[in-house]
Length: 114
Length: 114
Image 1 (tube, helix red, strand yellow):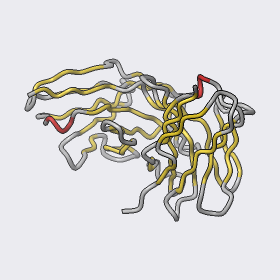
Image 2: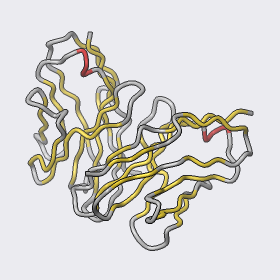
Image 3: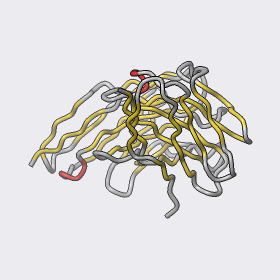
Image 4: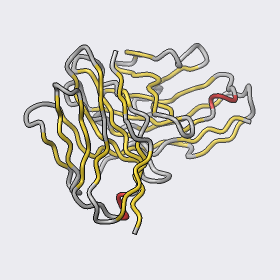
């Protein structure tokens, strides 16, 4: 069975500062990894995903995450955050052989302050 | 852009009543899911559905829960006799196929059980 640990429940940061949201997973099989974002009163939107290939994946709005197999991590980073990045961020894992069932971490609330 | 739609957005019900939450997945998707998020907690997998049958379910998905795809477009979650602890946001998701990984989520149905 898989599990996901997001080490920080809340991350406050000032606008234009860099941020890292940490995610570690455990699994006995090969996995796919995802970051989803949830803006207030909205559903879950895919931010980026790692399926295979390059271990560094990027989103269209400047976020990136790096898959580190040896450390079983998939941390999310952004070099300069905006107020509009304020949201809840969920790391998720699914095993490559299953029905795409996602297992989510507890979430990290990113609060960007002016 | 195609999207997953859910109704109702919010339902208030009395304990012991039956509730049906409805979802219209993306039209060419083959895999369907229900997740729930109790306020302040992580997003939890309930059930996955493929080829008109349940492919996997969690321990949360007990005999009080059922899913159905009655007409080829809707995907419903029924809770037969609601309990206070069923109060949560319920998310429907759909996916195009295995080995793609990404799930597309609806905006959720908030269920409040009084």
